Length: 141
Image 1 (cartoon, rainbow, N blue to C red):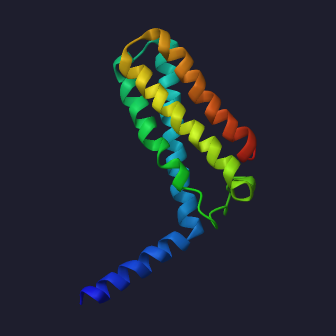
Image 2: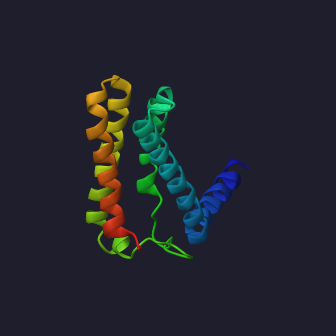
């Protein structure tokens, strides 16, 4: 019975990963989360509103940044995707851009946790720059 259940799980897991449309929808949700946290942090830093939530958003962005590299499997450039073929055609360049994003998200979380206002500006700029880099090179307008 265990073998049958294991084979069923492996088969179902493979089917899920093979579904480009499902991967695309998941990716959309992840990037809505990225955008929401980025928008919230920018609003906090510009208007000094809900300052007590900055570290929460920064840490959530740090966590989400670790998911982003997993949401571009082969076959997921479907539907109304803004993902450019360069993602899959230039995987080393894309991976380097994602590594910068993860590093910048880590930096933003550290800056927010530090409580040092002088670290926040450079950290949010680095994070925004890492987002812009991917948008410029791997996302259709």
